[in-house]
Image (cartoon, rainbow, N blue to C red; front, side, top):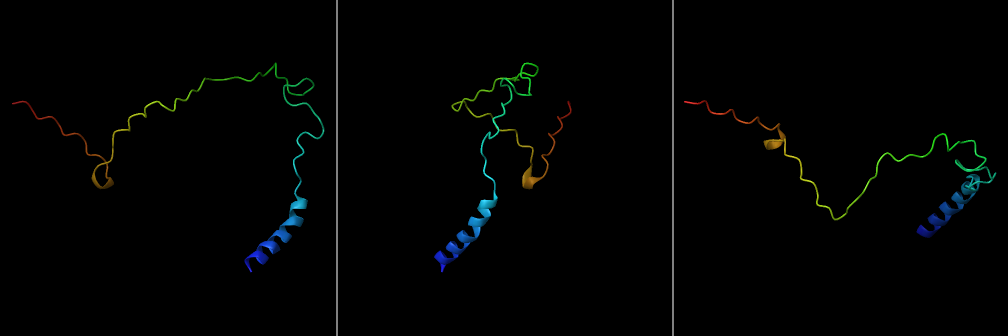
Length: 86
């Protein structure tokens, strides 16, 4: 039963797959952006790098933020007022 169902679904999908166009890459051979002959002028708008990103997998993790939640999920109570001088 299970194999028949899978076979039936497969036979239903095959005609549908023939209707979906496949990607042929660059069939008309037009130049890509920045290549000679393209309509995009790479000299007028060169690619830029805003900053350099580095990743150190051995770096220690940052400290977790200070908890701002009090008991039972309520807002943290304010710090007590200082005692008045005598």
